[in-house]
Each structure stands twice: as structure tokens, then as C-alpha cells.
Length: 314
Length: 321
Image (cartoon, rainbow over all chains, first blue to last red; front, top):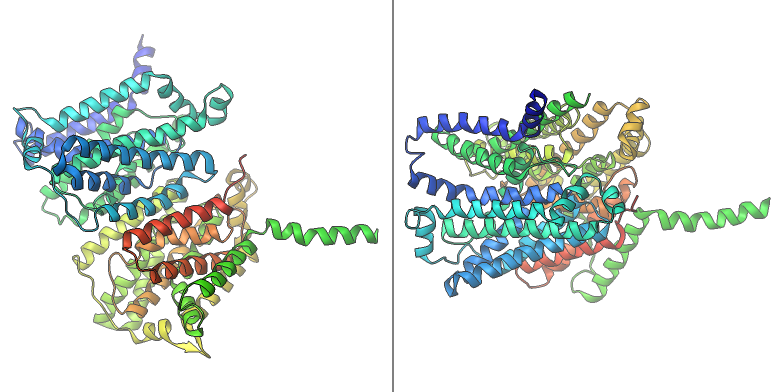
């Protein structure tokens, strides 16, 4: 019985560890902002954290399949730009277009990775150039606009309902469903052992392409969320999300070599990074320090992870 | 016996040429250049060639450093940050305490970033891509803090002449690039450290088991790469007399693309630093061709991105294991 308990704990080591860290961070946070647990505050914070959480989920999806996406920031900007340019003519159509664009770019990345025989790093780095160009064509200068009613409802709550929070919950639920399908299982199999997966009859290329496309959908939703939160579009705003999504995934224990990791841990890790960024602002330091912190978090997270897992394997 | 060796000898150059991707890179470069001269305006004069090799030197110097790192199956995504770091720091320091001090501090700062990369990769065991992405971000943040968001411009006479002067008609920046390439060729293809780099690129476990010092090799490769990115930043500062926080950004992708288009395997262990020279010239030529074409920045970026992907597909694919 204790064996089973420790096994369950070990299986959820990342989630429990991150949960504990989050509690500590929230305690510190409430010291600076006593309003943090009120509905209004939760709405604003979830609106602020939604893009990073969804982007991190996208990055985790790709990493679970054994890849990496350095074009994530560019795709996020693209979805944001498409949505912001078309939002005045109808929000649903704009959202559909933005999602389609993001999923298509993701699938294109996936096709290159699966069929070209080029490593994901170089493919997605070159693709980031390409999608960055497409974004500039769609929206050369920051601009576009989102209907103000939507912006208000999203940031201040709609009939007391925190829309971004609901959106995150729905996406996480959708992931849970995907996870139970044959594709969800194949995703982990391909990431864990590509040759083995292929030998047991999984179409590894199809799985990879679908993984990149699904990541595109997550990133597209993140871009739409960012456009609604800020009320307009900006072709260059997505860049930091590449690094931060990798940082959140790594912090969550998603392996670089694929096949290992849990999405709920990714959500917690993204939340952690978001809160940490906000705390930095509370301390009165210049926002310029944000980049330094993000880079440092990434290095520390990986180093700790490496040493923790090395102990277990040795 | 004689006949046998003769046929072997006759076959060997052809096969060697087929397998020598660096030679292919020069082939593609020459074909592209001829096409540019024939079909585009302004590529047939001596001054255009001069300008091209001068501007290619900025990219080329970074790419030579990148070659060292990629050859040991690493990658350096922090070069964009380091190019900006060196130019910004030099401009800042030079305006206070003079050119030579600025150059020295800038190179030292660049080298430190490279050493940090190597330390993270070897001691903390962070994957090179993530480590260098993180240091690049930290450098960008540190520059924001250091300059408070507005970097200075500075005229450093020494750097201006390095970037713009000529020796018997050849731009000094190009001469510097060739000198650096020669030194890198010796380091990579003739020295003991170079053999370590190739060994690590071909298989880290086996080479470490046979006594290749991973840490020392990583410090040499990443250190040299960052130092060269710093040198390029200085030459760029001399060329434009201004520094900006984003001036290094194009070099991240372009330096890696130069290496890979130059025939070096992105997985490491195979290639030649001379191929990188062809790669950098090719990419600079393509950029110049696109600049001559009157389209928006976005379209230019799309076409360059597509060209790079197409070229990668054409001759940088890895054989599947």
C-alpha cells in the first residue's frame, strides 16, 4: 500500500512539486496584492496568462512527439494579426480564419519535419522567418481592432463569468479527450520511441504532422486571446512566447527527447512563470529585467531537472 | 595493378566531388552569381562585387564561429544577442573612455557569454539549443537594462576603417573574414582541438569514452563562436556608426543557414569551414537580390525564408538512420 502511494506520488512528482511552488508563490503574491483571490482579479489574471498557458500547451504537444517549435512566437503573432484585421467584420469568422491559418502553418512545419529529413530545430527556425514575413504582409504596422464589447467582456468578466478561465478549462478538457484517442496514445509512443512506434504499425509521419497542427491550434487560440486582451494586433509581439513556452514545458517536466510529460503540469508551470513575471513588477524593478528572469528560470529549471533525473537513473 | 589503381584514381575524384558538399556550395554560389549578373541589374560591376564581399563579411564572421559549434553537434542561438551586445557595449564604453577600451570590453563581454554557454552545456548538461536561447535572452534583457532602452551611437575611427577601408582594392572587412576563416580552418581541420570537435560531432559517448575532453572542446568552440560574433558586432558598429538592440537579429537564422548551406551537417561531425564561406556569400547575394527587387519587407522575408527552406531541402537533408 505505501508502495502504491509513493508510486502515485512519483508519477505525479512534477504536478505535486509545481503545485507546492504555486501555493508558495500565491502566498507571496497575496502579500503584495490582497485582492488576488477576488473574482475580478482572477478574471484579469486569467486573461493575462491565457496566451502563455495555451502557447505552452502547444509547445508541449510538439515536444511530446519528440520535436521542438522555434516558430511558435511567429505563428502566435500571425493568428493575432489575422484575427485583429478581420475581427470588425465578424468575430467568429475572424477566429475561424486565425485558427485555420495557425493550424495550417503548424501542419506545414509538421510536413517539413516528417518528410524532409531535417531536424525540427532548423526547420522551425527557418519557418519562423517565413511565418514572420507572412504576418508582416497581413499586418505591416501594429493595428487592427477588436470590437470593444468583446474586449470588455473578456477582460472584466461576462455576467460574472471569467471567460479566459473558462476557455483554458475547455481547452484542457479537449486535450484530455484527445489524450484518450488512438492519436493521443500514438503521440506519446512516437515521442518515446519512434522506431518502436513505427514497428508496431503507427503512421509516425501522420502523427507528427497532426501533433504540429494541433500545436498550431493551441497557439492560434493563444494569439486570438492576446488580440482580444489587448484589443489590437502586433506582428512582433509573439517573439517572447517561443522561449517562455519552452521554459514552461521544461519546468513541467516535458522531456526534450519526447514521450514524457503531462499537460496539467505544463498549465501549472505556465501559471508559475506568469505569476513570477507579475511579482517582478510588484518589487518595483524595471520591466527590462523580465527577459533576464525568463532566461534564468529556463536554465535553472533544466539544470535542476537534469540533476534530479540523473540521480534516479544512476 | 597499374590499371586497377588508375581506375580507382579516376573514380575517386568524381565520388569525392559528389560527397563533398562544401564544393557543391561553391557550385550553387557560382551559378546564382552568374544568374544575378545575367538577369538582375547592377551585379556586373567591380564595385558591386566589392560591396557584396564587404557586407558578406559581417555574416561570414559569425557563421565561421557557428561552424565550430555545429561541427561538435551543438548550436548557438545566442549569436544574435552577442552581436548586439558587442556593438552596444563598445559604443557605450567608447563614448566615455575611448575606442580601444570599448573594443576590449566588448570582446571580453562576448567571450564571457560564450564561456557561460559552454559551462551550461557541459556542467549543467542543458541542451545547447536551450542554453544558448536562454543566454541570448538574458543578454537581450541585460542590454535593455544597461542602455535603459536607448543604445548610443559612436564613431570609433579604428572600427570605421576596419569596416570600410580597402587594401589594394579589397575591402579590409573581407580580408579580416578570410584571415579568421584561415585560422578557423587550421583550428578545425589541422589542430588537435579540431579532431576533438569532429569526434564529438560524430558521437559524444564514444568519443568521451575514448578520452576526448568534452569540457575543454566545448569551451574552445563556444568561446570562439561568441568571440567571433563579438568581432562581427564591432565591424558592424564601424560600418554603421550606430548600435541598436536588434541589430543582431538576422544573424541567428542566417549564420546557421550559412553553415548548413555550406555543406556542414546540422548534426555535426561532417563538413568543412570553407563551405561556410560559400554559404554566407550565397545568402548575402540572395538578400541583395531581394533588396534590389522593390517589394515590402514582409514579402522579402517570405521569399528569403522559402529560398532557405528550398536550399535546405535540396542539399542539406540527413540520411535517415
